[in-house]
Image (cartoon, rainbow, N blue to C red; front, side, top):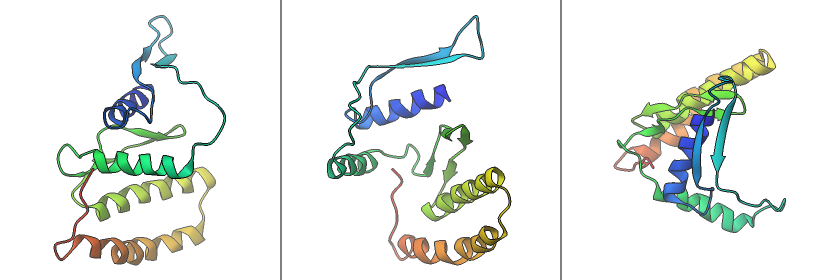
Length: 148
């Protein structure tokens, strides 16, 4: 988890250094191998929410400024939703990436909350009809999403 945070923040900092503090190091204690650390520059927290328009503009700039290293959709670093690791992998299309990663999140939710047959039934048309009908037209006829 510390490695992931370190590498992800480095990638963000390289594109938008105003969004995250500069990372310094991560690792494990040599004498306590199950205890880990992550160090970054100090930024005072005010407890106030950022201006929503400025923040969303910065996030949009981040996603428009970054580029995929190989022209594919995905991420080379495992990220975490809380304590849950998410392996992103790589996909040639946005539809494939979105479908694959969303299925993983649905499955994790089913594991965490217990089986929910209603959700399972809704997943069939969601993945079989909704996603293809919304995303596929955006990647056909010369149109395409560009991986960032």
